[in-house]
Image (cartoon, rainbow, N blue to C red; front, side):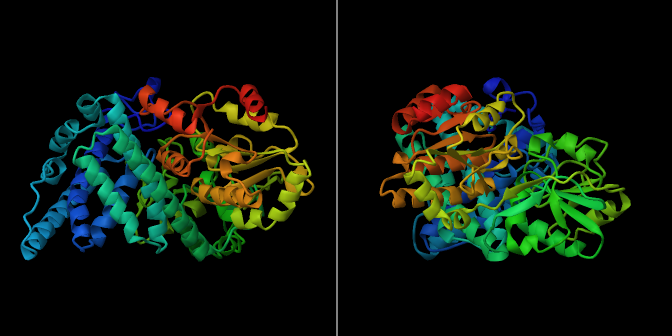
Length: 548
C-alpha cells in the first residue's frame, strides 16, 4: 500500500505498511483500484456527455465511489470489492453506449487505453494483485513526485467535493454540470495529464466546482430543515435511554428522530453533527437533547463511555473497541468489517432495540451549554451592528479558525491561538476543529458573542458569504479586510475547501498542523508565490505577525 491523503500520514511522507487511520493494505490498494476504474467510467461518460447523452447511474456511482475512499469512511475490503465489480459493469455499459452512439453518428470512436479497457478480476486475491499495479506510488514512479502530487491534489479535492455532492444528492439537489466536471476531470487524469500548469488550473477548477457544490448542499439542508438559528445546546447527558449520532448526514438524523418519537430514547449528536441543533425542523424534536463528546479522534474513549447505541452516518469512524462493537452501527457509505450496517431502507430498528436494551444514563449531569447556529443568515442579520463596531474600533480583527480536528500532536496550537487572541477580536469557526476551544468562554462585544460557530466543514460556504458581505460593506475585497484564516486540515474535505479559497483568490491563509505530504516543495513554492499560503508556526508568533 501507499497512502498519503490525510494529515496523519506516517512520517509526513506516506503510510506503506498499515494506515495510521486503521486502514489495512488490502483496503488501501482496493480503494486505489476503485479510483482507477471510475477513471475508465469517466473516460466514456465525458465523451457521451459531449455527444448529448447523460447516464444517471454512472453519475451517482462515480460520486459514491470517490466518497467511499475518503479517509475514515469505508474500511471493509469486501464492500470495496463489490464496488469495483460494479464499476467494471458500469464502465462496460458506458463503453457500449459510446460505441453505439459513435456508430449512429458515423463517428470514429477513439482508441482509449488504460482504465478504459481494464476488466476486473472476479476473485478477491486476483483483485488485490490488480490493485498493486495501480496504487498511488506507481504514479509517483511514473510522473515524479511533483506532477504526481498535483494529480493527487486534484483527486483528493474531487473526493472531498464528491462527499458534499453526495449529501446534496441524497436531499434531492443535483446539477448536471457538476457531474460533467467530475467526468471531465477524471478523464483528463486517466488520459495522463502531466503538465504542471494545466494540473494547477484543474486543481483550482475543483475549488470552483466545490463552491457550487457547497452552495447546493446549503440549499439542500436549508430547504429540508430551515435556516440555522442561534441555539443553545446542552453538552452534558440527561437521564434516560440514549442513541448517539455521529458523522455528517442530517437526513439520517432526521429519519432516526422520526423513528424514535415516543419511544423514551434521548438522541445526542457527536462530532460534526453538532450543528444539527440549529436547524428549526430538527430542533423541534424534544428528544434531541444535546451533544455528547467532541471530535472524531476521541470517539474510542467517548463511545466506550456512552451508555447507549451509536450510529455512524458518514466518515470519521475509527476501529471500534470490543467493549462497544455490539452497540455501534453504520449506514450509508461508512463501514467497518463485522459492524452491523443499516442498508438504504434506513430502518433503524436494530439501533433502537440496542438503545432500549442498554442502561442509558442513570441521572442528569450538571448542565452546561454552548451556542451554535451562526450561519450567514444569522450573522448578516446583525451585520449593521458588527460594521458599526468595526468602524468604532471596538472590533479590531476577525479570525476564521476552522477545519478538521485530528489526533496528531501539534493541534493544541488552535486552542492556544483562540485563547491568546485579544478581547477586541472576533472568532468565526466551523468544522470539528472547533472542539479545540468551543466550550471555552470568550465573552461578547456589546452583545455580539466573540465566538460564532458557523457549522459543519461544508458551511465554509456561509463563511465565504459573510466575508463577501463585509467586503461589500467596506467597499473593498476580502484580502483587504481585517480578516485572517487559520485552517486545520485532516482529510479530503479540507483539501477541496482550501482549493475553493485559492480559486477565490484569497491569500495569506495559514495552514497546519503540517503541509500535505502530496504538496511537494516545488508545488508549495507556486502556492506560496501566488497565494502566500503560510504554514503555522506558534500561536504567539502568528498572532503577532497578523496583528502587526
